[in-house]
Image (cartoon, rainbow, N blue to C red):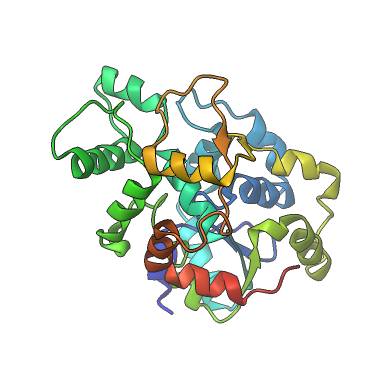
Length: 277
């Protein structure tokens, strides 16, 4: 494993008070994982009090500009990897993550960015998909379906995809002392990790760690869900709009599933190899 390549795409978490390194991926529980790490680094309260003034989740701004901002952060991380320090990684069900990544592109904030003449990686991706679907520059409020998103993904160079849409697998997965856990087993896995490494229990703040900012999803009939995935989501949904819960079983034996398996093959192979906690 090339250490510099392993930390280039997604910079893992490391801190002098935590005896392990934590790898992560966007749209795979990264906020909960970051909070869990900060708790053990004794920085969670400081991070939660941090106010950036940016249109982003402040704890991730803290991650970038405080936690990882030191000039020696990368060198210390590379040294720990060279020394064989254990790496912990959580991998999310690739089918659920693909839908979450699609929802990431249906963000009303893009309307404001367009009006203000600003841009972001997400808006750039949305515009690329709209051009692929409509063959022209259209309003960013035009809808595109989950199916159109997956077809667009399947035609891209996976290695150059924006990180919210790229596979979870990366060079750090080649690290010999890496331990993978399913994100769906987060609570059980963190209890096991804390016991194994002599860390304080995070169970008293479990609700704080897993409470999230994502769109609430509900059970919708299979027929209605598949129809919605073929037609598209509004970029500016009303408060009463119901987002369906999409799972591997939902997409079984459909083009959705075939495309996800094509793009996220390595992620699926790893996820399926892991025993539930």
